[in-house]
Amino acid sequence: MSEKILLVEDRPSRQQIYSKNSGIDLKRFNILKNVCGGEEFHSVKGEITKEINYFDKFDILMFHRSALSTDERTMIINYADSNSKTLVFFSGGISATNIQKVGKSQLLTINSKDFYSENLKLFLENEGKEISELAFGTNWKLNQLTSAKEKLTLNILNFVNEKVELEMILDELSFPQWIKDEYFNIDSSEIDKEQLVSINKNFEAKIKELVG
Amino acid sequence: MYSIIFCILNKYDFIKGLINNKDLTPSQRDRILRLSVKEFGEDAEIIEDLKRRLAAIEYVIINKEITKDSGITDTILNVNIYPTIHYPQKTVKLLKYFTANDKSLKYTTHSWDKGKFSSFKNFLASIQNEWKSISEDLKKQNNRLHAKIFNFLFNKKLGEKDGLYYKSWGEKKLKFGWSSNELKEFMNSGENRDPFNCPIPDRIKQLEKGINLFYFKDYIDIFKNEIEIREENNVLKKLINKIKTEELSFDFKVTTENIEGKSFYTDVSYFKESLKLIFRSFKNRTEFPEIIIMAKSDFSLNFLQLNITQKDSICQRSIEDPKIASPTGGEFGDLIKNLNGLADFSISAKFIDNKCYRINYLASNENAKHIEDVENVNGFTYELKFYL
Image 1 (spheres, rainbow over the protein chains, first blue to last red):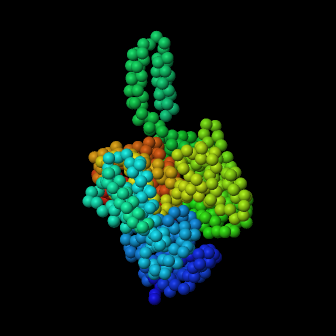
Image 2 (image 1 turned 90 degrees about the vertical axis):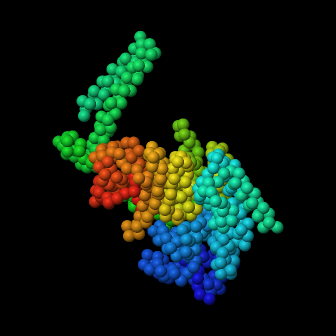
Image 3 (image 1 turned 90 degrees about the horizontal axis):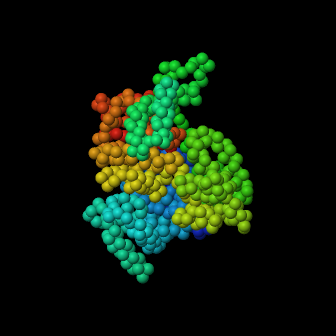
């Protein structure tokens, strides 16, 4: 099996400690190219500015955020967008897990501790098919729905306008794409409070179903 | 110039004398006030001109050496103060201390690996040393940004009263930081304490009712987002949406292009204030309801440019009008002040002579011209250039 997931880390000791704590042996995954410190790290990082097509062979690119400069980060984000790649930035400076759509790509931002967790093992065992597994684990759907329900409830409580632009509220609440597609598939570009309450009820029903 | 000021002051004293006259009836006093407003209104243009000329003099005196006998000549009065040359790249370089692996300052915003520092005292000493090496430079670059960072890192009296106000940092006026006593106590209360998990003391929570932050990590998170627009969570787009809701009515339509996933260092509060000023200026011209915000990156020159355009709107002034070409106050003056040391700032538009120009107010390129001809523009555009 070819390496379709790239992991680029500049701090080998951190990777070693976190992987040990989570019981992950990164070497056993043929699907993963693990570039961890040393000359290879500098060489792969250098490809962002030198020859970005180097990354064509991978579907999923995972970088330590602080290992890249702001312009290198912007370049790799632009590249991921143009080439429909999934991109992951992990860092001790990221406080919350978030998946967002950037053009044609998906960007997951996640704290380093959460990144090197059992979810990484699960994600690699399932050949990197579902990025939400890396972000939220086995129960990712339930996790995201619960979080979405909490955000929407707060928004409904503070709702003052007659109507709001649909795009604006979706941006504000940062829902994952699948939730936008499944629950906010309405014809109008605006949405009112009553519709939001109804969607929130649908969230609740699905959560109950998933919990069983 | 002085005779004009003298004349205005004389008018002021004369009117003050009239109003203080106890024999006046309320309606006579009202009439004097109305006439005074009219009189001073006619002086507004003169005052604006004086302000511009004064700014030019200050510029020459502060930025260039003048000999004893140089005096204030017409040549000096005609000096144009724009573009002001500044160095936003330097601010960015200093803010990068908060992500560099070899800096302890990084760990004021990044979670600690176990055993990273031998003691909290050593950590504070280490960031103090690093701060010393950048503090003066950052202060020169942007005083307010410097004060915010200093208070977050080193102010031991956050949450204590300083005259009428509490000592605090940042936009939300937060009152807990790295040098707060309770954090020190928490760190010394056991082995391998994680500062990010320090609970916020009740005395601070009492002062910050409505903010609802419970752990120091929540404060750190806010700080990080005050010095950098971060790609995670679509911060730039959310910020634009929020300001649009606050400043513009439903009659306006804001479209964004290529702004997702963008990150750059800046003083985010100043950036927000600038966006508000720009949006407010659009509000004055409701006949042009289409606003386009577009980001473009230049990796050879390492910048991200944000163009904010009111489509089809043209500038109703002449390119020679000092209010637009060499502003000293108003909305442009505030924007220039806000963005100094943070981002290059220009506008481009079609003017009343039907030609398109760019006016550069803040530039990091020393060869930048004040006014340049541009080929075409699709509306009145504010151009902000952030360095990466």
